[in-house]
Each structure stands twice: as structure tokens, then as C-alpha cells.
Length: 187
Ligand code: 5GP
Image 1 (tube, rainbow, N blue to C red):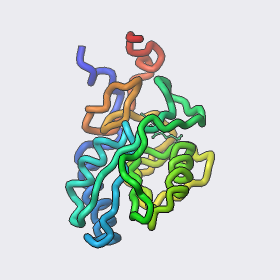
Image 2: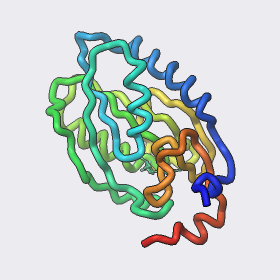
Image 3: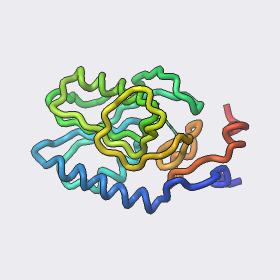
Image 4: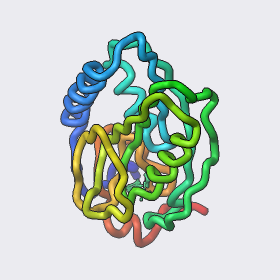
């Protein structure tokens, strides 16, 4: 059976995502130039597809780095407990930093990242997120650039997982309720 049969509906199509990424990249292109040499920090794992597409539309010199944060484990509800699983390879002191997130939900993860990064004294710090669920916000976090605001639904695809799967789906979708109910049949 195809994994695509688990998907109930498409929330944001591949074409819409790709068109919006060009606009988001243009916003960044207007903010930075070569002399800034910003570091784009991809928050793993969910933002890896977004970063890969975004970076190829940027016209200023930049570096990329990666940070892995645990938030949800295998389920779909936020615990508010956030941990760094993989820290940056680069020293961001005095650097322009752009955090690249997949989704801001309660804001706990981003709040944690922002506090951790601010303590490292970057020259500038901005946040770009592909998705935003403003209705779920528990902590007020500054987000500079938002791709799409979405309703309070658990979404997957385009880097976002359910139980570590479906990250390869090229659009943002919602799974059938029975998939969440019955799980994926793996431990
Ligand atoms: P927050 O800390 O803002 O509640 O959650 C942020 C993280 O939770 C995101 O980086 C993402 O990993 C995960 N998350 C939040 N909402 C969703 C969702 O609808 N789908 C998926 N796959 N992950 C989500």
C-alpha cells in the first residue's frame, strides 16, 4: 500500500509552497548582502527541505548550519520540554543569524532557541518559518518572516513528519484520522 493513501488531503500544494519560497527568499535578499555573510541555521529535522529550497533562491553570500532540537518525540502533542540534540558547528558571536524553522506552534521551541542564541551574542537574529499556527501560541515569540499561517491541525510533509515518516511528501498535508489512531504499526 502506498504511503500516499494515508493522506486525507492537501493543505498547501507543492506549487504554492514553491511560489511562496521565491517571495520569502526575495524578502531575505532585500535584508542581507554579501558583506553581512549571514549564517542560516536550519532547525532539524523538520526544516531541512525548506532550507534546501530557500537557500537556492538567495543571491547573497551566506553559510548554513544545523541545530537539532527535540520537542515532540513520536507523538503529536507538545510537552514544552525542549532539548538540544545537535548544536551548531559555527560560532555565531558577532554574526548575522537567520533561524530557519518548519513551523511555530506553541512557541516553546523557538523561545528556547532564541534564548540560547541570544546568549551567544550574535550581531543580528531573525526568524523565518514556513508555517505558523498563531492560534496555538503559548509564548509570545518574534517571527520576522512567515510563509503560511495555518489553522490548528497537525500537518505533515515537506520536511514535517508524523512518527519520523512522510518528510519526503512534496506538499503540506493532513493524515487520515485512523493513521493517528492506529499508529504506523512500527515500534
Ligand atoms: P512548538 O514548540 O512551537 O510547540 O513546536 C515546534 C515544533 O513542533 C516544530 O518545529 C515541529 O517539529 C513540531 N510541530 C508543531 N506542529 C506540528 C505539526 O502540525 N506537524 C508536525 N509534523 N510537527 C509539528
